[in-house]
Image (tube, rainbow, N blue to C red; front, top):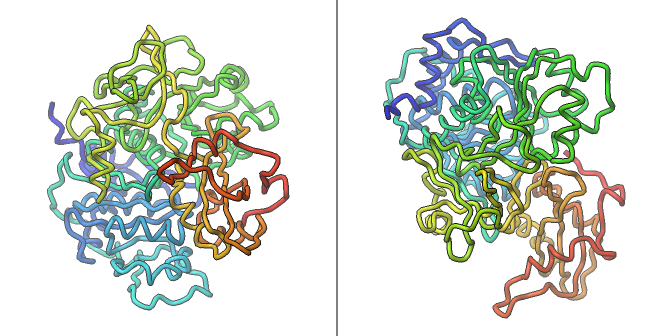
Amino acid sequence: MDKSGWVIGEELARQARARGHRTFLTFQSHPDVTYAEADEIAHRVSRGVAALGVGPGDRVGVWLPNGPEILHASFGIYRAGAVAVFVNTGYRGIFLEHVLNNAGARSVIMAGEYLPRLAESEANLPGVERAVIVGPAPPDAPPLRRISIQSWDELVRQPADPLGVPVSYRDVGAMMYTSGTTGPSKGVLMPHAHLYLFGQGVVDNLRVTADDVYYICMPLFHANALCMQLYGTLIAGARAVIAPQFSASRWLDEVSACGATVTNTLGVMTEFIHRQPPRAEDRRHRLRLICAVPTPAEIAPVFRERFGVPLIEGYGMTEVNIPLYMPLDVSYRPGSCGRVYDRYFEVRVVDPETDEEAPRGSVGEIVVRPREPFGFMVGYNAMPDRTVEAWRNFWFHTGDAGRQDEDGYFYFVDRIKDTIRRRGENLSSYEIERVLSEHPAVAEAAAVAVRSEIAGGEDEVKACVVLAPGQALSPEGLLDFCQTRMPHFAVPRYVEFFAALPKTPTAKVQKVALRRSGITAATWDREAAGYRLRR
């Protein structure tokens, strides 16, 4: 198979030649961008980052909200042969520091509004040398003492001639960070073939064509929005309409106004849309399908009847691409996430202890491997032990429990690993615990997932805390401390104080026992207490 075209920058150039004047990107508050314009700006950005001293294989932080610049920056970084390190826009403190330090990024392209958070962490970011600023900084932002600043306008003030750096489908193009449990978040090394197959899978399985309009309202620093939706749009030669963020109350109006034909939802998004009051306009749109992961069995038929659009299930993760899709031409199977996208992937359910394939119908661990080299991640950055652990016996172990029926359809059952998934974010319990333990009144802490009352496989975060001798601390005081040190979506909803945490004979915290106990009479709930998070 000729995979020379499985390079995102090359695909953009191909589409610019084929349909240069056609609109590629539509934004709510910025002018449309054609394929030719996106291609030209990518050349300018590639020369701009090269002028910063960025070479092939170097890592560049991309810390930007949904908008033209996050896409122009990433395309330009790819063209320079460098690696775009996508940073969650909510990150601050140790969450931000770990990503930039682990990646070894010397430069970061970021929104000016985030400068105060960069200043807070500057002393703990010894490798970061320069920041390229998009948009104004707050007037009261503290000055940076060591990191130099350059404007985005300066960066792109370059010739549009190709830089000429050869980039292969085998080269790592991006890094995205996924949750850690017993350690910090892991940087997923994503070669261009991996990035490309995210989009090709959407084209193949959702049958996206140049006539489609893809509505994207998820954050572009995550794989679902960037790799599935945006790169699927690119490969099909279609048009992407990019919203700043998801809003359940505006969702229907926005998909209707832009003429969207396809979109994705993730986690609780589907239920939040379903909860909106019925309207006469519910079917006045052009949507032909929604890729909804997961598709709650109790919502899917009602949603389809109300909005007149089917929900199509799939399964994947940043590390392994999307190896399972529900075929478009089969009857709905409640709870199933589909069949293997066997053009490029293999999937099994195995005994988590022996790795032997489990009998059909029985629950085991979902494992995946690509049929084409470099079809998904090549490892976790600077974490070889984690890479080897995940790649046991020549299969990538997802840490998810599932089963396969006699007809070859897969069903997600639960998480095996101690992971927390909230509002579309995979949270590191380790990093939450680090912040909790920094409070002077806390002797020990554990963060665990508590199943949300909302459908869609969502979790809430519970903090299990042991106070130091002689110390007193209220739940509100603990959350006030957390809010200045972690993203708002990682701040625990529940807090419970313990005299001691349950331990194994080797003194490890028994998180299984904590998760099993769930919400008790002693558990404090910030929503019930009326505590409000600051964004």
